[in-house]
Length: 464
Image 1: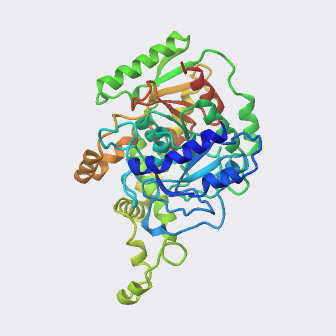
Image 2: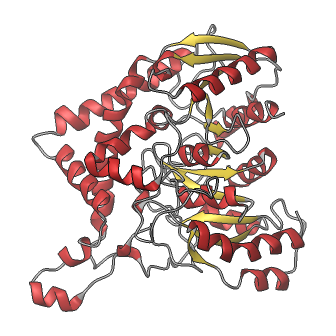
Image 3: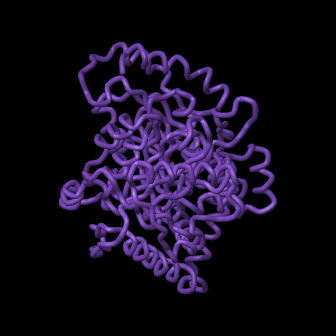
């Protein structure tokens, strides 16, 4: 990458922003800073980055796509932001997103929807919640972008925009400075068009962070690095739970052609079963709203959130005016989360979901050849190296049809992440890649916990 290519990208952004509504906040002085900066030969020199707007930056506001944080500026940079800056990357702006990461279409943003750059003739969703990050990469505004993935929020928009979307193992990239949605699932993910860029960015961010209590320890990172696969052919599992009759025939054909391509390269393909995968949707929508309800309680107009003091006096209330600025989807999940945590439902809902999550992790461990470094499973000597599935159940809908379906039943949107949720609940590294160029289909490859480098390297080896 060069200074010229970086400046070209930066100068293209105003026009792209008008067309696709990619960013919430832009660094208007980025080009001047770039020209004034004494450039060093660093790993990410001249790479332009977009950052999802729930990752804090001290020089730009962080809104989480919400009115409630419209003017919030963090006093510090997130750990991953500091790492990018220290490695020479140019952060051009904060990308649009579903409010507080809650959504799969990019429509639940106070700053209006993101439009998919693949479809200039019609307005289609870019996926969510990292919609702006995916659109920024797909449109060529940035070399790479950071998103966050809680249940598929990096991989689904990557599939819808025909780019690479990588969700690392839980704990591999620091969450310090990431505004939490559901902290037991949240992962910082990377979106890019090129494998070499994705791998370079991951190598910069893949470090232990003492500020993040969930950061993977140095000892486990060392063990993971020692077992990176060097063999040329692998055993790949196709979970029967991810094969559904509702998948469009063209998408199914593309997927089968991709499987045939794997077999032609000498890889072995086996049917596998992950029985608890069928429970992923109820597990996810029991646990994540509960964590969200707890995390969002801090937005009371005193600790965080805009406060309307005049309305406080008129209504005789303290924090209701502030919390009324949450969007509908956020309010729905707060209500659901508080219900799941109440005394009447806690044991039957929340505790049961936690037990089922453990069972899901065990089902994944029973399929993989390698042991799970975090939980100490023994591994299955007859198991597979990777699991392959589609990323999304369908093609990206138009914004109007997505919105209408959501109005009919808000739970329709929840089904979009049904193929991505199981890996998030288990904390596994997963990369969504496009089997065809500029076609909104993604296939995702999943490895055992902490086997991130092997997942990236294997996917890279498949590129023609």
